[in-house]
Length: 230
Image 1 (spheres, helix red, strand yellow):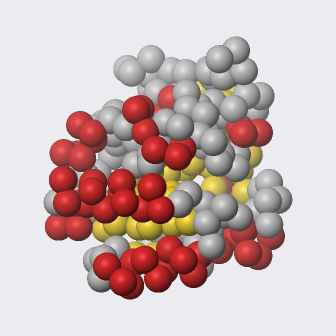
Image 2 (spheres, helix red, strand yellow; image 1 turned 120 degrees about the vertical axis):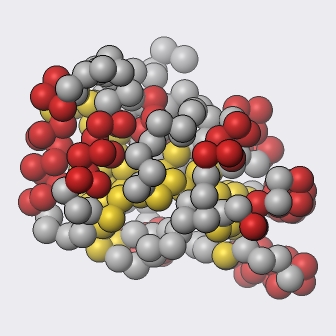
C-alpha cells in the first residue's frame, strides 16, 4: 500500500529529546466515544495506518502529516488547557515514538487514552493509559488482522470496541464475548457504523439479548458530521 506514509520513528531506546512523530492534527473537541464521552479532550492524531477498514472515516490520516518532536506535541497539547488527552490515528502504535509520548503525557498529569485497532502489540503501552482496542468485525474487511494476544495485556480499566455494520457483525461480536469471556475482563462497547446501521436497531438487539455491554454512538458525528479536526 504505497500511500501508507510511515513516519519518522525513534528507535526503541530513543530518549525524549530525540523522539519524533508524524502528526496529522492536534485539536480540541468533545470526546465522542468510550467511557469519557462528553469531556473536553485534546486529540493527537498520528499519521499512518496498516489497515484499510471499509468504513474508515479518517483516511486523510493515512499519509502526509508533519514531523514534530515530542516536546512540540506536549507544548501544543498544553496550549488547550484541558485534562483529557486521546492519542489516535491512523494507527498510533505504527509509530514507535508513540510510547514515550504516552509516558510523557501521563507524567504531565493528563488523563490519557489510546485508540488502537488492536492489530499491533499493546504490551509496551504505559499501564496508566486507558487502552481502547477496536476488535475488528468481519464487515470491516480487516478481522484477520486482530491480534488476540493483546487480550492478555488488557485490564478492567481498558475497553474493547466492536464497530458493527449489520447483523452478521453483531452475531460475530456476541461470539467473541463468550469465547474470550470479555465482559469480565474489560469494558465492552458496541457501536453502529455511522450511516450504515441504524443506531436504534443495534440498541434493540442489545436489549433483546440482555447483553452486558455499553451501547455508544459517535457523539461528534451528530454534532459536527464528518468535519476533520472536530
